[in-house]
Length: 124
Image (cartoon, rainbow, N blue to C red):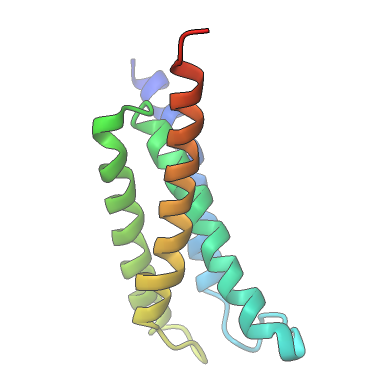
């Protein structure tokens, strides 16, 4: 039972570890993309929280009544990750990253997954 539970949560935990690792990089360690830098980094927020929310809902067994738990965990992780960034040299936390970009990624991912699951549940 513990093995099954751990294997269900492992992808979400690994995704969180990757996000934490990226957030631990000082600004001088991060690549810079010139004029497109801001767009690429905000798209990264959307992508990483889309992936995280998918794996969180997977761990919660894709139950419809648990979809908001997946979103809430992703949201709280995003908020604490921004606080974490405030302690990293050269990084500044942004409430907008959490409220807009991280949330957009999480919500779009959950919505697309729900549409896909509902489509597959339809009788043929």
